[in-house]
Amino acid sequence: MDTTKTSLRYQVEKWLMMASAISARVSRATCAGANARRCVCVQALRCTGPVAIYFFCEGEGNWCVSPLRAERPAMSVT
Image (cartoon, rainbow, N blue to C red):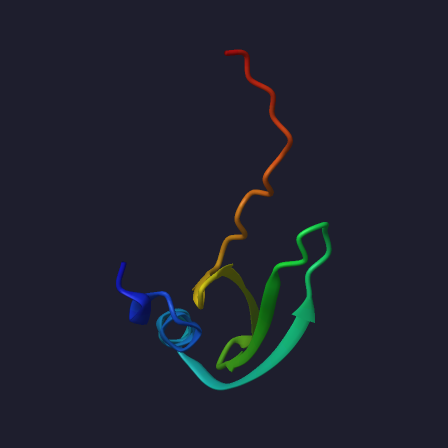
């Protein structure tokens, strides 16, 4: 996998370019849950008003805009 396309910088530039943002501010947020994955909130100012996008870390520096599903306990029969 090309990690440059899943880096936080790449994802922020990709999504903010689509939003035609004038300025942006990054703030960290604590994610709730047992695994407590990292997430970052990027707040941007557009001509039409403010927008906020949350980016979630999948691990190993890979970021995306949708959180991974939490692993759940599972049973199997062999």
